[in-house]
Image (cartoon, rainbow, N blue to C red):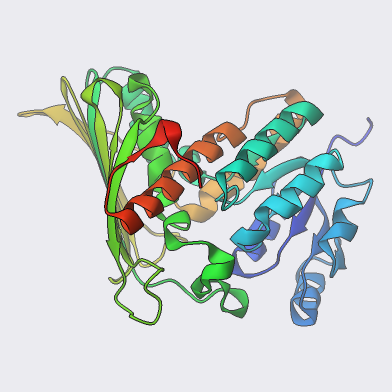
Length: 348
């Protein structure tokens, strides 16, 4: 076709939806064609910020457009399955914010539908695009620490913002907070320990600092078991300050230690670093590119353009997104039951 731009339709224009819109608008080969958002105030904000895009209040209207190639889904978690299914059935490619869905069967249905329609289904686990966190994976794949045996991934950050209409504090819309933040670190753990095979079981504990919302867990820890004895520990607190993430990946020949800190995940001035080694033999990786949520989002949009134009695989596929959702849902069941969960037989 004469114009090779990939036309994006954006569903949602809350705080992060605005960041998606800016990333699309600033990416070569991408065009923000349409935005769908429910509230009148958000519709007006979208028109003011992106006058080149058509704005509507009904996401179904956006999906029905012939001039939308890819639908970018940035709406509350409970809506992910419905809108993604409709977009795939309409022949659109989809970039979907995590989690894919809040039920595993829905994830399976979306993966199968994308394959049937031969459409791209990508999940925005943006840490895979980070110079830092992808740098960890590169070292692992290069054999810098030998056979990976153990991963410890920790988050300490300030409490969640409410989100549009308070959806992030509404269990009926958010699903659970395990699906909000630990899902990223489950994805990293599975990615980093992929040489061991798929996770087999997990055990999780969690609690809330607010008795009025006991099902939304501020503090959470899980141990994930892989074949051959490898395992990962994922832990978080949402009752702290600023935003701090660390990952330590230990192998048969050494350890990788990565860290990232800033006032906020979207900060443009983080402190971060990556070292690896064993004993006194310590090496430090230097970076020519910073890392942060908004930088990775821009890279994600560019990757989606490559997927549509050139058939490149997405950084995180629907299958990958399904696995990270599985780990979250199994962890939630483990917290509730107080018992380990076998992943091969898990159903929710």
